[in-house]
Length: 372
Image (cartoon, rainbow, N blue to C red):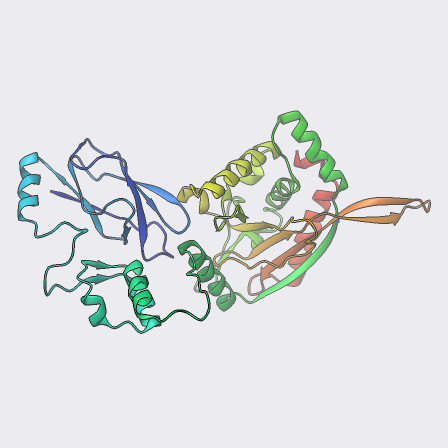
């Protein structure tokens, strides 16, 4: 008998959701192959088998599970599986045997403490595993009609909250801003879109411009270590904030300096689709050493994002703002401006360094021939 244990997929989560089994219960598994799909607060990930044998499912689809939990067994023969089923006191999803101590997830315990639910009440549920849904049901039964409507934050939003809290707690951030004329950049984006068929936008060119300045500004792509040293990166892996209505994601454009504008555009198009469906793979959300945060909703000129823990810099871009200025001959002409916001970890980056990066990115966007 081989146990299939759930690996740690996201260090920010204490529990995951087992979405579905890819191999039916009781089927033969041959070697390493995808067994199940597990959803963390950020991504969906396939869990592979750890050997071969007959699959015996312990955790059903749609149920919560925790890192390190055994979610299935692989038996050498049908007889061995039948013997286990006959001797088992109850399946994993059934109620706990009388007197058995239930396993209480960290999230369920925290919710119980917040609402004053006692350990005895949790034990009296008769569950093998007590989850947040069990605690919520206890709270609903015990509470009077609420005076106001409350909504429980989703697991994904709770993860965002944890990251924001950690950033505010640990990163002494400073900010700088630059006003950039993007008329030529928008024209280049239009030409690239027509030539390649990809949707090349201003954020695409910004990602490329930032990545091209990796060698000149290594501290902006570095990570501060626990002993006060700085770990620099060999390549520019640019994360981009993205919210399509199902929560905030930060997919990563790896080796962005090596990609063309249309290649980056195609990646972002795929990322938007995955953000809408919530189908990111973990590898697509990890490895960023700098972040770009587009805030391009019409009328939103300026934004100040957070520095993600483990990084030293994030650059935001607002919506385009039309302004009429006089040229050298006194003729009024319309210019297209955006504001770039650079927020940086002041332990690693000083104001002079921040201004230098902003100046370089501004020059890239105002003379954008190299960004195609």
